[in-house]
Length: 293
Length: 293
Image (cartoon, rainbow over all chains, first blue to last red):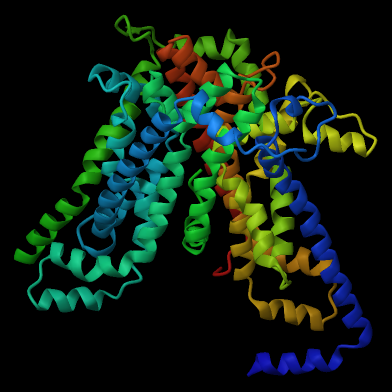
């Protein structure tokens, strides 16, 4: 009621001058957004344009703003120069296994914190959140030494296995979603004689699809991008993921910016495509939790 | 009694994996790295207890350590100040109801999806003094672009600019914060004749303080752990001008194999992060406005 009356008041009091000011304001907003937008888009424009330049053109001073003869062969050429498919296979294995691990463990664990009652549950949950404060660097050295001792260096295991034991960020994320599902549903199933595992699997989990999509998006992007983990644990070229492979490519062929940019484009594109499909869930996940970097 | 016991059993089943993971991947490395920080340890030979010597060396003898602290504070403070201003400004513009809003939002967000290795290579190339697009455009405006990553003065600003470019996540969080602000406050202010700047200062900014606080904490923690960009782009150079805390720690651990000293650095990092988080949250009471109070 009150909001309709304000609308009436504002509309009546809107003079021609007000309208003009509003139009000017909108123009200003567009001016700033487009101006900054060009600056933000510039590096990606340069990435793509450089990936289409010929080797001779890439060195021109001053540079051409776009390639004179777009050379699409740069993309297949990358596959010749570096073992792209090996790197891709390793990245793929890392992403798939980590995501499976994160999916199984976190849906399970968060359920225990959101939908079961047990003593000191909320205190333990604070401990879960507190683990987020511990920087990676503190864990890094003892974990490296331990994995070294059990002979897991130069394999993907140190990067995959921990994801099967839950992660504070995802537990928090999923717990938020679990709590929005009415408890009555679980209670009704319990009355029907279902045990907790059955309730989890056939009553609650089917309602968690949006949250699970968010988790998968985050985990895929995170592991695909991960640099320091593979850098520490992987030694041999044939074990490298794309992130380490691309950086090795740079240290070996630091001047081939045509191919480096083509490879960077191929490395980035899957993430952008994935984002297009899961945009809503992705944004939702960020606003819900904020963190994860 | 019976239900209590079955509750406990289910809690054990669901939360058990987390407990195991916590002991293996958090509690163990936590204490182990504390122990290592009191030793001299290079993995090959057994750790030798040396008391507080690592900390003594760090504070009183290691000049490079202090250089890295200075660099990191420079980076963190500049990034948090300029990043917050740019992000709030853009979020406020994106919050206006205008055409093409989704497109603008996408442009500002896509850099987040670029993997670190790719974005590092892109920025090396974009900032190339002779062949990069940045100096090309500066020259077109009649300015002489610096030698960015090769200059002790400009390498840190360059990395700050790059970090702001990739801060779309913070923009999304600010945008969500802006959308939480009740519309009727703005309408009331407009009826009272308040201009856009007054509205921003007295309504938007105070109501946004919890989100600002969150982003400041995250930004500080991120800066102190920053590693991959400087590792790939500059290796800490020129003349240690971009040697950040996380990079210095990595060099000690994995290139000098001084695991004991690196653990001491990691523990100090943990203390610094705890300290920042507490100070910022303490300060909260004075300047953050929470709606429920």
